[in-house]
Amino acid sequence: MKRFRSLNMRFVPAILVNGFLMLRWRCLIHPGANIRYPFACRIARGARLGRCKLICSGSRAASVVLGRVYIHDGVIIDANGGWIEIGDETTINPYCVLYGGGGLKIGAHCGIATQTVIVASAHTFERTDLPIMNQLVTAKGIVIEDDVWLGAGCRVLDGVVIGRGAVVGAGAVVTRDWPPGAVIAGVPARQIKVRGTATLE
Image 1 (cartoon, rainbow, N blue to C red):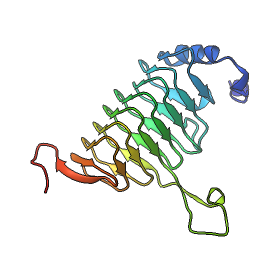
Image 2 (image 1 turned 180 degrees about the horizontal axis):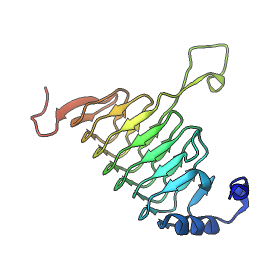
Image 3 (image 1 turned 90 degrees about the vertical axis):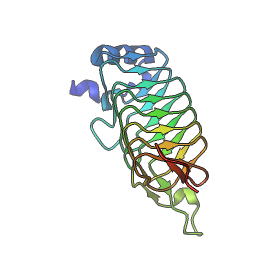
Image 4 (image 1 turned 60 degrees about the vertical axis):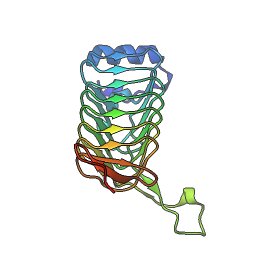
């Protein structure tokens, strides 16, 4: 097995890699899914992966850990030198992008709507004598707890914790922590109510 782990899988046809992973983990993977560094991922039995892209090169032996998830076509999940964990019964809808530089944990029973971007790292830009792309990168990590709904086109930035049962409105930019049950919206996101209560003024 060690010999197989050391092989560069870039030149192995995707359909063979995906077939191996389906047998190994007893899950469903679209023949056109692009999974790089497949030995660095762990997938729960019953997971369903569409025509997505997984880049599993990161800081852990299993840098991408997927529960019994449903990942739609066009999704990009990139450990980006860190790690990503997604819990059971969570759905990642088409064209979402998830980066795990500082560590990204998404709980169970979450809904991540189309075109959401979650980035667990950030460029610094204080120095003016260097191009921004040559400056340091911070990576604090992101935690999205169980039963969270992120509306279409959300942006979740590094260092954020979103509490259990929270709802994030479409197009919101989340820049700080939010407690369980919060309903937030806007740019930057602000709390508009708590689930089960009247709207805040």
